[in-house]
Image 1 (cartoon, rainbow, N blue to C red):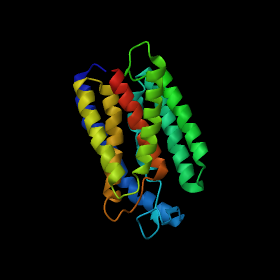
Image 2: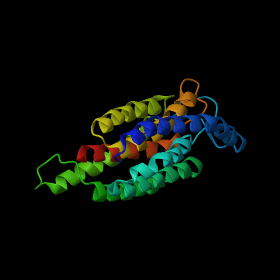
Image 3: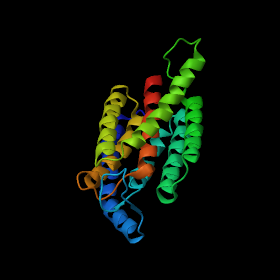
Image 4: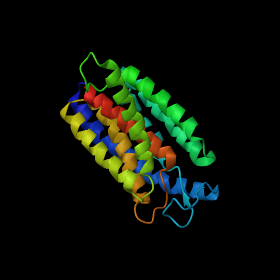
Length: 229
């Protein structure tokens, strides 16, 4: 993308479009989840008392499609992005049907392997230590995806952390003039910012495994892309 005038128009445009669409859609989505009784039921592991609608990550996950065209200008990121959408759907099914840990882990392994094969490894060791670099990169992707899933138990925590990381990505990508990836990150950032409006204290919706698996994996593969760049 070489036309800077177009870029300067797209940067606020993509962010605002994603933000406004999410603000418009979340109340309708929350009402739909309540009508269908698709709720997160309290138990001994959870802080909330009353049932709360879950799977809020579906909205900002699908809104990332706004910036998907720009992301896919990097051929190496097409497969990782599609993997993130698969994990979005796996998380959504898990929020509804409680998939086994083995099933979720299997999809994460496939996504991590495909991502490494397309983006590459983190060069922690010398080139002669490809296996070491591969394993570190693999466990980083799997570990971060699951760690992000674990912090989705406190109102606003996972969303706030995601916003913090995505803003850092925006700054790095802008400095590095990687505008295609920047526009994708902005489309995701707008959706997560809107989600926080409904997820902070006295949360009206949770992102669920739908959002945490998607966000954790997305941040992991974007981190890998930035390191490689």
